[in-house]
Image (cartoon, rainbow, N blue to C red; front, side):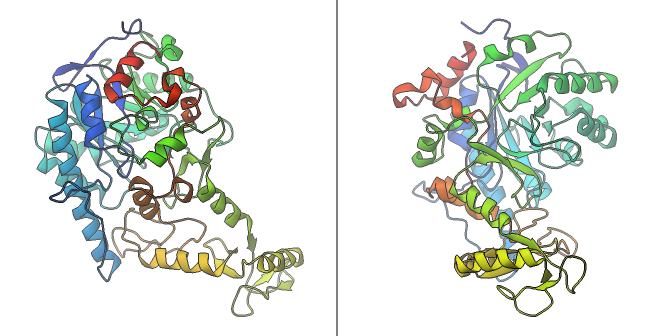
Length: 468
């Protein structure tokens, strides 16, 4: 029995359930999970963000960067990304066996995103039904989709963002825009689209925001057949009953990013799966430590707590005595041109006594205090940058023009490629960024997962279709 009112939609020339698997970053969604989701009649999403390729034994090929320069390492990263996503799509298509549909997901802010998209779509003609893309303003998504005759599904977090994309680009290729994904910035896992006008501490009800999005789409002449995909915070469909067959919202589909993490086919390591079962409400942190500059949501583990503590060990300075900055900083820095408040110098002495003896400059005329070991780790990670983002706050990399953002590298952030590769390939979830949506605590309370039960993707989709 399917949940009342839920009907298949036509996508890619066939009927599929309006259930989309979220495409989760570096190797957290791959061919096994997305192929199985499609085989169950939904829309599976291969993550095309530095996906894995395999050796002759079927083991993932480590992504190593021995090249001397960042630019050369960046070119290597693009090769890895195209090869890996191509491999994943082909395998997912085989697993799907002609059922459902296969999408790919990319972050527009990832390094070389246009080149990666062009390469994967060229290699996978006829296998990919659509491309979902967010994390930025992907104006070029429509023209790339048009070149390869695939659908595109922009990911946005407000009607305003959609209107800007539509007017600048998407109206020219309206026939290939298969859906608009509304990713709730307070509920979704991973990178979120909070604007400067929105308060990260004050979540807004998604219903009026999605109603405003539909109103904007109608005003711009977008076909009523184009669904809005609700992403972020979706667990039980019965909790969204008033969204289904609702004339104000029009056609609605639902994206599931967090629930598919805990399935047999999910490629994340067992330790990460075990962590998901232990979470309580409030254990997911919406933070702004990402080197992308975007807010993002992840498990509040020792890795994130360390970043929080690092930013708390932060004081402002001027290069000469002025205003309240009358004390000369005499710990953690070299040189005499660091003037701070007297009370901040006292705090710096306390941090240094606790082992945080090194002061690192930030782009904002502040210094943060860290241990010598943490300083060495930060500097090595910055030196090893492989250009995985179009703009990286942590390393000052930019993937075009003169290859630098022109800003000081920010020690309050971290190398996102390093930590996501590590957690996805067996690293300790406590020591890495563990992305998850804000509903992840429900693994602990949902009876479906009791007694350590881990469903197959097919079982999960069948369960979702019942409303639970």
